[in-house]
Length: 395
Image (cartoon, rainbow, N blue to C red; front, side, top):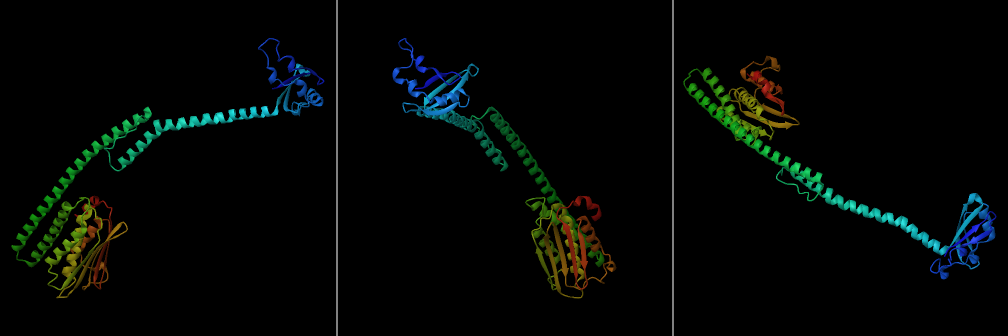
């Protein structure tokens, strides 16, 4: 339904499509019913002259048949000839819509199909396998090393990674089992060592008891009693070490109460009218610090029981162990007569005070003694300490 014109340099129609689209042979050319008569579709001569003058290349015009057409022109023969093609506007617009749909919707459909294919392939080959690996990692973080990774038909690299992951988890599980068995054996051996040390210390205590019964000198009997008390304190520490659920830490709540009951019984505090008040928080005292702390408590309580209430005086001894940040605070205070003089340098340098200072240095702690009136012994020490490097000082 289009028409074609050949123009000369002046815009005159030299020939039109009806001269060459209808071939004389039967079966060739455009059927008569589909032809547009060039005479009825010819644009206004002024428009054709404008085309020949290079002033117009595309335009719309209505022919004598009343049909609006869209025209486009092209120059040939170096400007001496022009071709003008016209097509009904309705057909041109429909063709343009079709072309628009073809050029826009087609690529969009192809893009959507490509994205869908990529998503499906990524889900089947990559994403599902990665999610399975993530689930396995979460299980391993919960110490569930028996979980195995099922990545289905994922990509070869994902399957290889899952196999390596499973092999690594199996080796870790085997190694962890070996370590647990080794730790259990060492824990059992350590408990046995503490048990035997406790039994041996009890034997030493029995020897000291027998020796004390054979000594008539009161001063010697007193010295043996103090030695027996210190050995018994060591025995109590080792007892709680092997009875503890975790040999790295000691149940100091029970340990301090046991020490207090022992000293109260040895020094007969109840009969003398002396009350012992114990306040102990569950402070995580490491096992390496248990011995110096227990011996410090023993010395401080014994000093208070033996020297704070002479001549039948009555009163109260208070023992407290609390946590203060990363430190432990141990206090033994009494309402007795107090130390002689306000200057600690003037106090008698007894073995008990010397031992307390040595234990404080071993614990890397700060020792303060206040009095008179009364006496307060305070020891602040860190909960994370290395007492092994300071055992020589206590010796």
